[in-house]
Image (cartoon, each protein chain N blue to C red):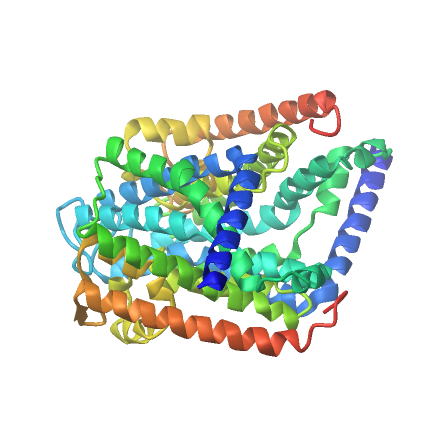
Length: 268
Length: 272
């Protein structure tokens, strides 16, 4: 078991090094891409700043608390995107060209190979943006409120991990869709649109919308829930939301296995 | 006259071929019917929460903001373009050589392609989105003056193409332009008022934006649709701002010609 794990990790890091080396051939382009990844994701926080500057705001959320929520989502994206989201485009292209079989023939997990091949270093720009925003907002908020701040930090770290896992689930779901929706390069846009809801506090949504965002499409774990735990006011729906997110990831992994089994080459 | 007629026929033929080609990938476009309204729904929810007490922000109340974002959605769908990606791909792959052999300018060819692509987008994306905005969100966008709006939209369409075409010519100088294209595309959208009405930007920035081509892509057609135009305290009538738009289109045409002439000297096929 340990030997297999070690072997898998060795293969993964080897692929990762290859992907990084390939991308490093155009260093200037990589640098610019990282900057744009950082800037593009800062649009919403900048809008939030402008809105608060004009005297408006989200009820119950101070400016820096709202920024902290958005920074949390950016950090989760900054971790998940470089490692997971490249596989959507890679799979779309491989399936369209009919070369996905080459991965299936290799004596290692297809998912592991896909993840290794699809590493996108430019997306680390999102992480830098998220960390910068987080550092900017953190000194101006109270961590844990009345509760123990170290417990709040631990809870935050655990939920951030869950957010990254959920993002992996979203990436895998989009990858599964690329087997059915041949050559569709806009699959990630579906996620981008849905995840836009993750950037705002729950108080602005209606009850039914909250249900959807918590249990059906687990968007609330991506930003709101970790941030609210860090601020010491965990949402009552937290345990259910965590369960919903874990179920989502498990269902998507099941779907991935089914899609791989059903894949019939040249058109899925 | 004969040359103009021949050029028009070529334009129609290329536009029709592109239309047919993209009609084979209908689902690719139909995704817009989910993505566009979803982003719009996010805006509805946010501004409903922010301006719940009937307040205003930068002179916009909630209804005005919803109309603005609805109009942005329609206009940006109609002027959508990826000429920059196409041109850099041709240069980078060396396929550009075959383009030079054709008895037509590449810019004209690419513009014709965009025309065909957006004709399909008109009924597959823009019209359904307009209906969704009306039937689901009760936002009925009717141009204050249809003639001026169509003209402004056509000019916005042209300026978007020319800006992107200029960006595409960067491939004559750079090996890989993905990062530069993304960066310029992002700044273009910010400065065109896609994410936020330009009236909410700091005054000094608004003054700068007035002289850049980006506001003429989305912000101006949107304001023409809504029936009034103001930026950086400059209030212009619809015919005046559309006149400025035409001037900017001419300037961008000149700039794209200049970049083309400078760039083509550097092109040596198979590796540019």
